[in-house]
Structures are given as C-alpha cells and as structure tokens.
Image (cartoon, rainbow, N blue to C red; front, top):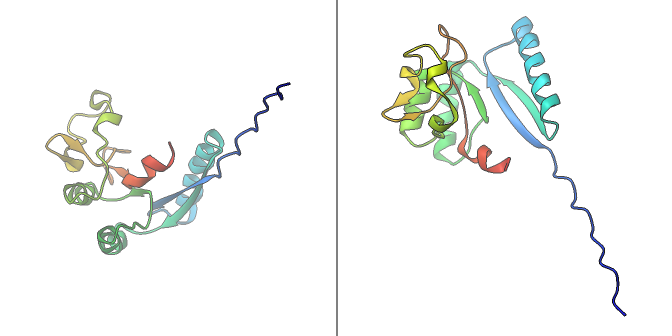
Length: 142
C-alpha cells in the first residue's frame, strides 16, 4: 500500500524593506509619501522606509559606506553627476537595459551616463536628474 503524496505550501516570503533616500521634508515629503504608499499597495511584499538626506550629506556619507560594501539606502534621489561618478567607481548598477532613452528628452541621461552605461534614471528635466539603487537590491527581490 502506498501512502498519499501530500504537499506543504511554501511559506510566504517575508517582506523586503526598500530604503528610499530623498531630500524632501515637510509638505513635499507628505506628497512624496503618497507616491511611496501607492508603490507599496502595488507591491505588497515590499515595505518602503523613507529617509531624508540632502544631496550634500549623502555625498559625504555614502562613499565610505560603499567602500565598506554597505549603503545608506537602496533608491537615492541625488545629483546626476554624483551618481555618474559613483557608477564609474563600480558602486552602482548599470540601468541601461531598463530604460528606453527614446521616451525621454534628448540629452537628459548625459549627466548620469558613462560611455554605454546609465547609472541614474531621470525624474525631471530641470532638477536632480536621476535615481539609483544598490546592486544587491536587484538580486534580493528575485
């Protein structure tokens, strides 16, 4: 006599925490929080933690952390030229395959591009032109 095969459902994956760094505080932060809430609603297994860093502060805090294999956040809103520099140093993920440049204003990627690699994605044509995230996050969300 054979025993019936039973399967145990896989346990649900624990939520992933995505740390988002941006310069917005006060009323601007409240508006941005609505965007983050909408993201969480669409992606219930990702929880977003927002941290306020001015670009100037991030530029001094992040490089030593990058060198140590750490980062203050996963998605960071900052200067395009700085994202390009950090990408050139090997700290950022190449986003080239994730974006269709024809959908954007010509030249908007110039500040975040190194030869054939793009290290930031524009969110406006006249302010900090990119956001980027640490390499390991893309591997953790599988």
